[in-house]
Length: 135
Image (cartoon, rainbow, N blue to C red; front, side):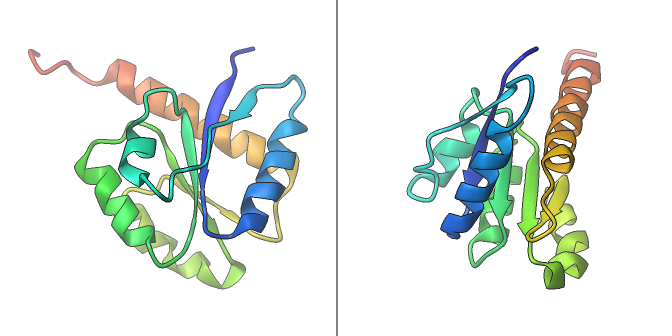
């Protein structure tokens, strides 16, 4: 099975720890974490062609990062990490380019793995079925 590289961008260190453990429990092993200097150079991290998906913690920089990703045609799906009380804001985040979301405190391994796999496969299908600029 193909391995997918996942980048976690969050100021919340608990997000990194919980998601790293969750991804490490995938059987067979199909996820690996990218280096997490993303907060220092977010655009560089988002544009890295080795990144298959991004899980982004909702915070002060969320809208800026989503707009930056949208403006620069970031290919990796952007999955938000929200608190339960932030679910209502997902519609706005989707308009800015987020594809899906996870809820802190409701993370189950199978759910996280499924959401990552689904969004990665969906993005690949869209990339391969989009008409070329010459069409």
